[in-house]
Image (cartoon, rainbow, N blue to C red):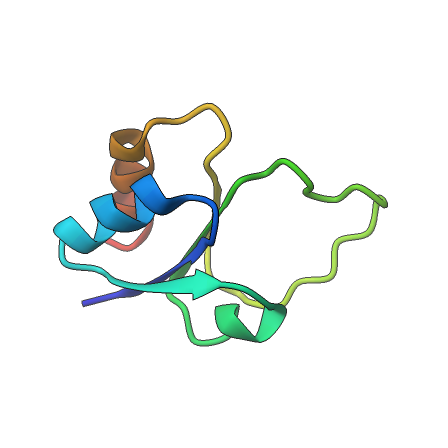
Length: 80
């Protein structure tokens, strides 16, 4: 199954993705995202400085304002 990186604070989303069979990796540092097929971030501190250095070419989903089910649906659609 696909490997999904999820920010540490998004524990409900981590569990929901595990329940769907995804291999979930906690994103603690930049290098954690390198082997992921998709990443889920909070979006709370995204691009604060106006600079966007990418660490991965995988799709990135911003979870801000979304339920765990909505995030799972977006992950499913991005990885099909």
